[in-house]
Length: 238
Image: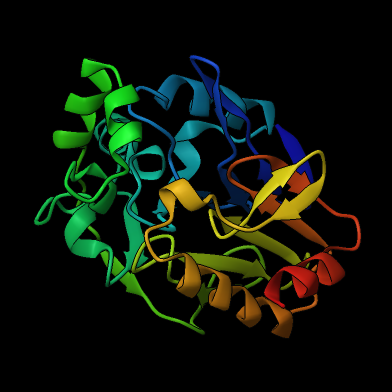
């Protein structure tokens, strides 16, 4: 866990050496989790929340940036474990996949990179073919400002999935990039091509980030980047 600003922390969830970085946003009354890891991540997420000083019982909402299994995986566990209703947010274009009406785009062997599919264990293949499902309570839209973290603006950044979104926390000038970018050794890179069905659209989506004054970027894969991020994004967008 790394605290980014007041009421904002980047979590580090390590499940079988697969490391991802959900974001936790909270105030005195409630907490919001942005993305929820692979299936089986609940205890790890809970432990990271406790490190931030936020009890799991305070969790009030989950924002899903997109439909991928490593982002939606533990939502059913979170909903089942909570003693009160938790609101699930996602973009409308990914909603039918998250709710199980359609097979996850990257879970379809006919659309997936054959080499990647063949490299998966049988357990992983079954997880993709029978993914976790959750009802999306509220659909988010481009430009909408959610009442979290002093205002969390939704930035619609399709390409990695049809409904992929980033979030910009205005108060702390933090970009939650989800999978629009990845970080390596503190440097930003574009989305991973092998898991981005529409790479052209994904790269074009980065231009939308130029409208924001960003001081730090939380990449779901790779973690935090805070050095000259506006310039780094500008170079990527070109």
